[in-house]
Length: 307
Image 1 (cartoon, rainbow, N blue to C red):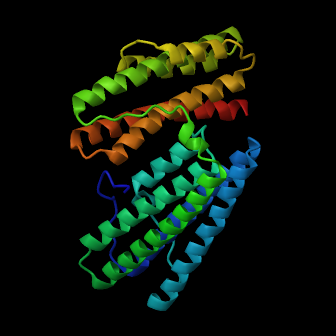
Image 2 (spheres, one colour):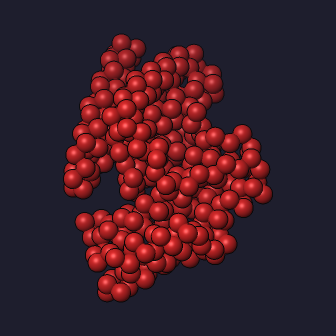
């Protein structure tokens, strides 16, 4: 289950404020899904774009549901959120990761939606547990239950997407971490960081050869962060990728390859953070995920400039 890594920065005094925050969360989700749909259309990924467009409609239904609850319980629509800093930070980070993604499929798109519903469930559960106001607590529990229901429906959609895609997302080359202790995490993560650094140095070299000095510099900075976290070693998988990159004659496929490699590394840390029961490993994986997100955002900005 998705967890909140820090206490939410919000103090909810009454039901209208809680429902206003809930509405802002749903509307933000709809806006993000809309942006992702537009991005997928630009990349000619029509199926993924269609999935995100359908999720926009789902979020609008959620907003209407909250508005009905507000009318019944307070006699007025939910108020506008005055301070957006109250939104859970994990949800904002998950959107940033999605918008930087180079590996989106309908299955992964629905996975993002499931994760965000579970983060919303964790958030509302926290609010219910911390509130001394019975009506706020009951409303937070209702919102938590709705988030759990929505997650269950989205999981069904995700399973259908899995079958439609023939499980190909499970056959990708994403590196996996399986560390049960902090020393094991350090050993495994250094190996993955080193592979990524070699890959990105090769991308930077090809970009420089194509006259893309600014893009090359950004990828070199990514590679240097990875090299500092790794062992500066390579293996046959990276060597094969280097040979393939040598054939790239345009910057766009190089940048997409660089983004995909950064995402595999980043996702490995997120996956481990979701699975581990060791608090030291969890903290280390979350720190590594935050660091590798910098690379995703930097490369995604380059792609936007070239797109």
